[in-house]
Image 1: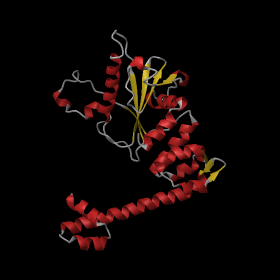
Image 2: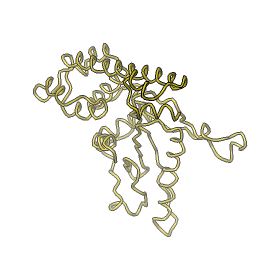
Image 3: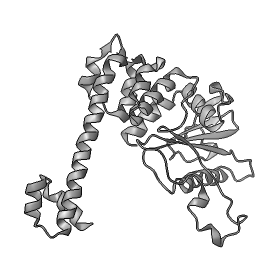
Image 4: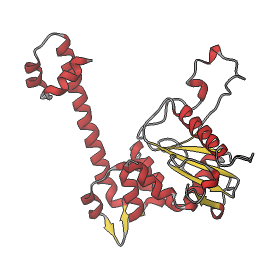
Length: 276
């Protein structure tokens, strides 16, 4: 697992948070997932169920069905196909668990997308298929359930999740005014900020400057955070402008050494632009 997945696994191995996320995102806010009925799936202790433990996080609910939470940092247009593959592979593995016929446990999947830009690619299976050549009854359509940190409504019962998700969403959106005004974020517990920091990437010195009694005062910290993000965006804008100028010079036939001298771009960047 990468460091993003490891962080999210730590957050959602907590059954109250796991239940709250599924209640909000999968069951549209209905508080019907009881955390006391969740059992962390472990292949050794649940070998009779046959479910392969390759998914990011799986829990068995009330001996009735699996809840599968998949973590995603990048936009994958084939994500609906991947989720269906997890579902059907899980069902298929259960058929191997016994030589006798037995009812299979359904698998309810939720994709938690934590990328910095809004999910704007496929959610439905038919968006991935050339479905015009098929009867709809041949391959039924499927729409995956997605929680998009960049744009989904954050309205959880669990205060930890409220703070964790809101902080990341505001920073991704550069919504500084709302971040400062949000009553949940006047002070943030150090553990929450450390987890959120895996995604918003503040340096340790920045965190240390605003730590007080195990909590982080965001009112004092937000101005530095805002300036940092704006500076990063400004620097990125300058770099893109230089690449645009370099590309035009390449098209006009200027020598690489000349372009490198005038734009101060590394020769490797110029060769990449030249290749495209």
